[in-house]
Image 1 (tube, rainbow, N blue to C red):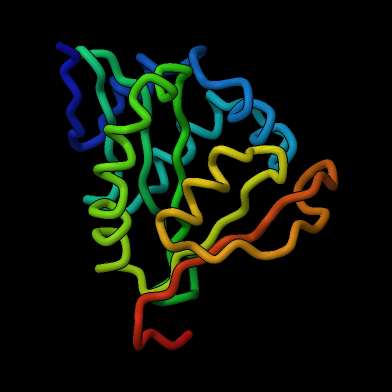
Image 2 (cartoon, rainbow, N blue to C red):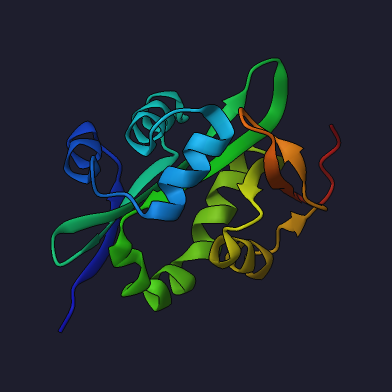
Length: 160
């Protein structure tokens, strides 16, 4: 039987995942910020809000890190993120079962969550829709002008 768990994210989890990210995550990081996935993972971990960074494990191996950080000068606005290894494919059902709970925890702190997803990252787009995010029309964005969808989820009653 496979053992899944989600724990508070730590630096050693980042270290264990470096060099193992999915190709789509590597590509998306390059297209968006012209950096490696390892850079984006470390940066995302570093800037995540206290209490809002987690690591998902399968059989004691980290396969995904996710969380949210605040947008400076925008009270109540957060940036959700997720970076994963190929093991995410094997853990998809576990991730689906846990997702809405963690998105809700992010929205306890942030009334508006938003970020960008590469138009070719179809599995992430499908998951975002399932989790209740609104997906905008793809437009050129990022370091190389690739097509990205902005996505967002607003807590009921929250006004920017």
